[in-house]
Length: 523
Image (cartoon, rainbow, N blue to C red; front, top):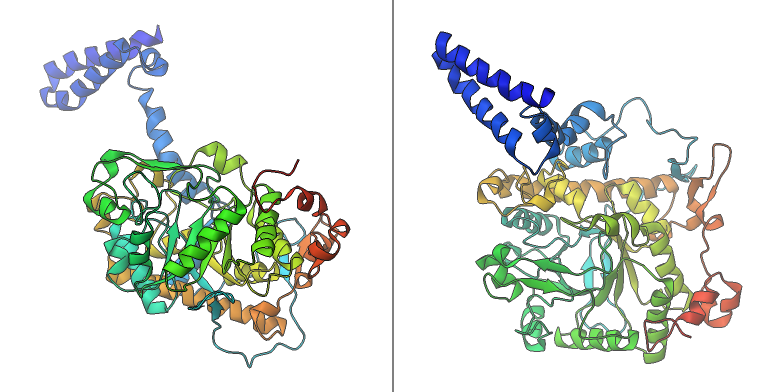
């Protein structure tokens, strides 16, 4: 009976208002038409059984993320970033007070709490900031890098204004900006900030018509002064082992120009590279990229999946003598504009375990002093950076925190192209709210304040530099009654252990499965 109630009631109201208050038909008549349409349509059960009123459900679904974020959640809730984490980035980006009153809101006796060990004698006579030369013995043009850079985000995923503001901020703050797989756009070039050119399996920016790698186009772009390093993307944390497709209708003239494809042509990024299929082939290609770029640093970016594959790369470097200049570890907690939910939630190794594995692979093979380790995955504060250094990182990258610096409010609309703040959209009217001259300084301020907070932690620990932070300096809670240093929780192998005595390590089984001539397991 309820199914007939709403449309009948609206029809009666229309007749009544037409008789008594004809002007009210402006409101009631459209509602009646919608109710009658819902009553007779066959696609939605709720709308058919509860005409008009069932649409309240869809309204509430649309409003739910905002109501939860602004009304329901407390300071420590909210994912992927809590309100407190976002608030810290906003404050530092604006240059506002970033101190916190009345002590920590964390439960220090729960597993959410971990801490760095401070010293009775802090060391204050330290440099204001540190920089790092990236480039091993086979690199002719090492890059003097900041300790926190902008992680990979492509033009196309981000708006033109967002890319411009990020690059101008990088220029103002003297740090690097990773192009993402979408290659180097006119907006990356405009302000001249240092670039890390990411090469994915689509080879955008150096692509032949058949989708293969074009060495001539690569050399042309890689030899420009603005490009400082080359990063081969093997996988990313948000959707590891998954390619991508940019539909032709989204390939505008500007995107086509950056990626080296035709306007309106669907862009396909395969799951795997076509230039190599084995660890040795990958290293040989990396060496050729280094040569074609004039000796600039070349490294890889990956979310760790199968441990033996990381060890296979180490074995290949030992066998061939070809070295990477850096390895950028992306955690499974990393984000992207759009990814299959199953891959985001259930595939890929989290940053901590992935970084420790890469560290152990390099230390265990005696290569760590020649190859730098970077990481990315929710690095939003100096504390997160300090913890990364404790686990073996040499420098850090961040993506979403720099989006917050631009004004992102974590509305989770990236995949729709309807970002309300103009960051992750290609709609021009939405981008108008993102004023480059205002947001670029915020990007620079956030980076500077975050690196400064890292320095304050190093001072408190009584160390000379962040590279002196050791595994024993980071402690985790195991339960409410016990805690321990991370080197008693995870294995950190000794220098050369995988060469001299792999059986003494927990990596022995994976070491035996690793092959320099294949990413597949040894039989």
